[in-house]
Image 1 (cartoon, protein in one colour):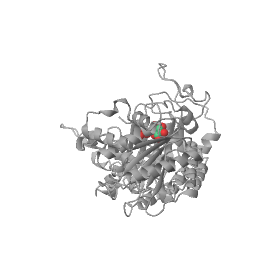
Image 2 (cartoon, protein in one colour; image 1 turned 90 degrees about the vertical axis):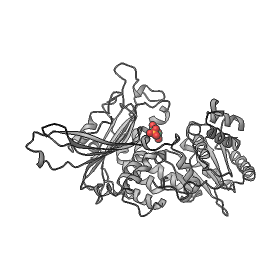
Image 3 (cartoon, protein in one colour; image 1 turned 135 degrees about the horizontal axis):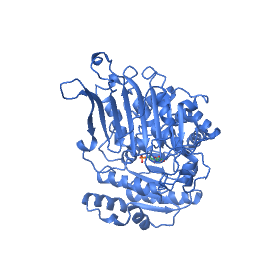
Amino acid sequence: MPSSPSAGLPTGPCVVVIFGASGDLAHRKLIPSLENLAREGLLSPSFAVVGVATRPWTNEEFRSRVFGDGASDSGDSAGNAARQWLAERMYYLSGDFRSPETYQRLRELLINVDQQYATKGNYLFYLSTAPQFFSEIPQQLDRQKLTSETGDSWRRVVVEKPFGRDLKSAQELNETLRETLGEQQIYRIDHYLGKETVQNLVAFRFANGMFEPTWNRRYVDYVQITAAEDQGIGHRGRYYDQAGALRDMIPNHLFQLLTLTAMEPPISFDADAVRNEQVKILKAIQPISSEEVPRSSVRGQYGASASGGVIAYRDEKYVAADSITPTFAALRLMIDNWRWSGVPFYLRTGKRLPKRSTEIVLCFKKAPFTLFRNMGISRCAPNLLILRVHPDEGISLSFDAKRPGAVMNLGNVEMNFSYQDYFDSQPQTGYERLLYDCMLGDATLFQRADMVEAAWSVVAPILEYWQETIPGDFPNYSPGTWGPPAVDELLARDGFCWRHCE
Ligand code: BG6
């Protein structure tokens, strides 16, 4: 992804208001990202943070809680200075998100903060809360005139995932948000877009002349997108059992990878130009009828490991003992446009798979066999272009080479680029770029209402079918395997097989 328009320059004056400031996301990602931005000199001197949550903390407690115990000295002087600078301008407001009184007090606090830090009435409200507050908070803010943009001041709202749980609820949420906010004020976040390698996908495709000519149905046989996790659901049973693998990962994270891989070159890197191309891909995905669901999708749920060391999904905390929630989902999608007609895109994601790995693989059509036909070479391997999103970020290209020796024999080799070999950078949380762009008003890496709705439309028939048809075979895969056996058939029917991430 290109640099933001003002990349390298500090943001303008503003206050970041984090709802749900005592939660995990604020602690693990948001505050550390602001700290990294401060360290890089990318925050305005006129900057402050206000945390809002129900816990009865003071400003001091908030600061020490989010920075943790060892926070005061990381042994890195620039890092310590940034943390100190940030801590001095962090405030906390304890209150119930449902109570109008919380918002009256927030308004008063913001007036004071504006005066003290010259933040000019520019507010970024970050909804790091449970989804039931995504409509309530903007409405309450609106009643206090905190979302209306007057004069030169801007007001923006970042909405975390999940953005709805199906098409209808996403449409309703969009409608409610639009009652109090303009579309340009709404930043629907998908943290996958904050990952360097996801942004690099666009650079790779459009900053290099040699790949794009082969990036189409003439040369590509199929595309695989994998987001595998070796962990289970941790303490998130309450949320996860209502969501499941498809809702949790596919219409958001995997569709970001899909659309950036498949989209046409945008006419510019303007937010709408990029998002217009992404949404065209979502709309070009062939609708799946309910009859086609069993052949175009696979769902799975992990059982216990044979050794008993890993418990079954149904035994996890807050999960129903007869849960039919999938912890694994795979889809076969076809994109009906000139570039991709006839090229299947296979997506898979799951918990308790053999390893943590997110990658995109383009499998190129095989070379014609004529040259080697009489040489005892049984097959030429297809060329694979593998974009490793996480971990071990990088790109590799596999191809056949002659094995040394008197006889003509081929071996598969790899050209490999690893991010860490080339670029030296401070560890990032993935939220830096997203927060920075949001403060600059660049929405390129955020989802537009039509994208979210188009994504839910694609998965709607599958969600409905899965809801109505009880799977007879759950649990159907063991921890540490690549999902249920049916996932191999999804590709085998087309004559392909999954690349099992090494
Ligand atoms: C979240 C999902 O959005 O993304 C989690 O709710 C998942 O279930 C996570 O584990 C994966 O993100 P990452 O950045 O850890 O690959």
